[in-house]
Length: 217
Image (cartoon, rainbow, N blue to C red):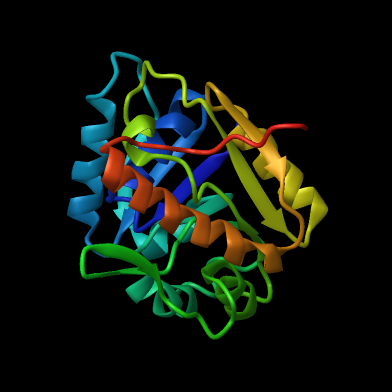
């Protein structure tokens, strides 16, 4: 089992993935700029299930230092600065970028143009000594936060390092109901991030928490 950290992990996505990784037997560290906020978030996760989970809170730098695999779950506004600040601590580690660059305009979710192409590619450029993987963009945080629920969806995983990608695919399939799908190179993440924005707009119309399944595989 691994020590898995979540940078900016106090939001729904970080807490949801943290819960599921802890349920799978991993040691989880919830990171935040504010260590007290991180500790409170870790305690909130523990209260969601009667199972004893190994979860603690820490500031982002400690989280990045102590973790073997690190998830980036910050809002896009703080994405690049966070990567730059933690470049040294993330060196040599698998970094899973889940960030979707988006904005709301006239009640509609829209993508933010990223010079690098996608948030994951931005991480790839800013963390040259890390193994950057794009994953978990299309999974509903609401469903992740229900510990007794099977998360019935596929997770598309991108990356240029096959060994690291395989590790994250196995990690994803440790979550009940999830199937991992190899999405190819990191450059393909743009289409996956944009798909999240489409799902958010669909969710708004239907008032649901839609996810995706790839058929024919």
